[in-house]
Image 1 (cartoon, rainbow, N blue to C red):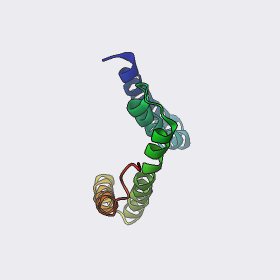
Image 2: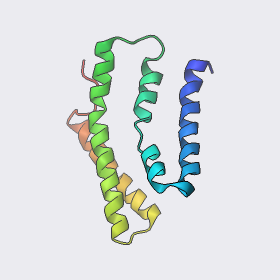
Image 3: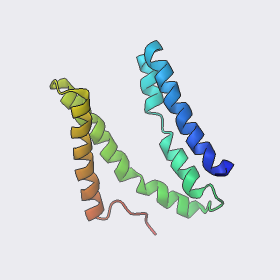
Image 4: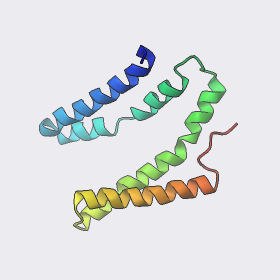
Length: 117
């Protein structure tokens, strides 16, 4: 594994460790770190870091992320709602992933989850 491929993995591990350390000190900072837009830059780095940095291709890829972000926002809202209803954390997460999967499948069926040409 070369440095170009290892750095995104190292950055991801650093974020996870940061959340774990901050969770006892500041729930607010841990939440901010947990919701940082780190996966998108890491994804861009992995997909386009090898030299293919054509602005049109990168812009198309970024635009294709929008439906996934919408499904993720719904995921967060479902987790919150289920927790407010008294569902356990694990069941809330599983329920939210079920809703997320249905949304992603629907987005794929209507061609919202494809990179524009």
